[in-house]
Length: 278
Image (tube, rainbow, N blue to C red; front, side, top):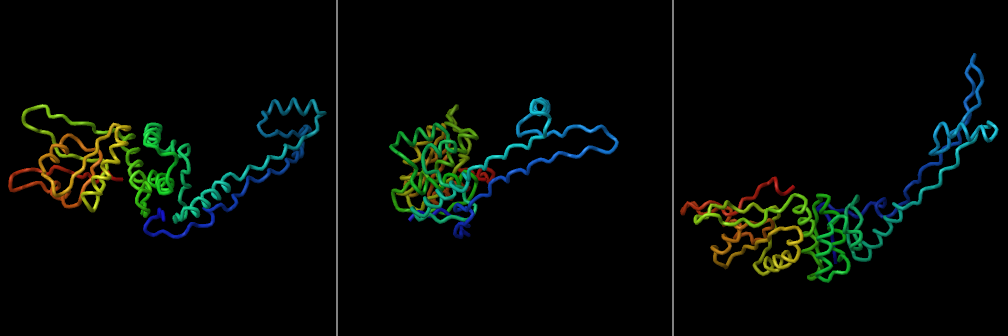
């Protein structure tokens, strides 16, 4: 089952699921205004939709000076209603529960490309994706609107790309930090300040997420780093100082690097700036 919902999620409001959107009302026929008292009578004139004043005057003269009512405006196709019905059918088919006001899912890469951009869309195709998975289709438009998403789906359903690609879109827009090289014998590079933080409960899951992230970070020039317990800190410290746009971490090791080692006069290796996670 794939679920994409904020914590206070309730079933979609019927308006989101394809209720008919009222079409624009047909404008009433214009009636010629009567002449003002004491003024010379003038022939009434009606301007058609999209017609200039001068063109209307010439046309009415050619038609004998009789006022002409504007043509009825054609009814606008209820495209919004059709889109809502398509979204409702897709969610029902894939057991997706969303809150009222949720944007429609991106059922194809053609629909998703304006959100993800050409480079990330191309990277997805290179990995063999033919279309967004259900969790991706609904999570992408939500996450890119800055909404909170709670997603539950089976293993292998594409959850990692569901939350990771919107984050990479933001990095692509803001600019990646790139690799920080050591310029002197003494390493004076500061702590890592990741733009994206991914927390995983186990070392194995953190490594899986990192492997998946590396398939797409190059598309936006970003760098992903993975830290976890049960391994030597030295190599991970060097990796962090080289730059980390995306940090995948287990909580214990993250806390270690956030605190530093005051007893050895070692500053934190990771700094989380609240302003980086709007």
